[in-house]
Image 1 (cartoon, each protein chain N blue to C red):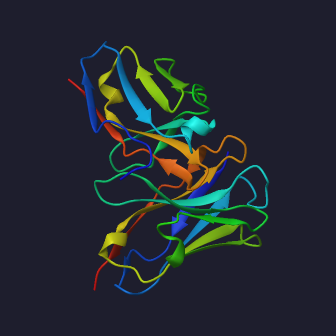
Image 2: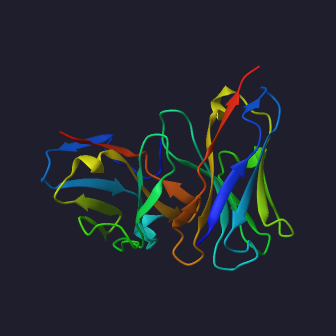
Length: 120
Length: 110
């Protein structure tokens, strides 16, 4: 049973870069069974897929965020990370890491989420 | 504006049946990609409720069921219970946009 846990600063200043890490336990991010992804949810709003990475290193990004997003993986630590540059107040949200299955493409496993506030 | 369209809210009395629709297009649901449903309670992460259009993960009551037809899908909840009051999201895959979600539906149990 996979377990995912987000970590990172809860407060980021406008124009700076948001950085979060997801630590995976109960399985390897080198597995071909899952992608590894990030989803966010602004307060009181719906879910927005940010991007995903596969064990091969291939990345997939939401076109609306692509110019500002980088997702990378560190197999030695069994972690994957999100960087979102030039943040504004509109990027304030709960950020979830999640694992969509390779074949069915559903998000089978989720982290608990971490609130990131963009404010000076 | 979400790629998949859901009604903002639905409601029903205990014991009743409610359905939540999810409408997509020819580049996602209509392209043959599966639809999945999530249940989210306030302050918690979404939980996979239905996968592959109509399959329930272990532990999900059979009161929950899903279906798909053409460019749309539906989640049905029978024997509505107070504990079902939550937000529900549909999700699929899009040829151009990768993973996509519906805007979410708030279920109120009257």
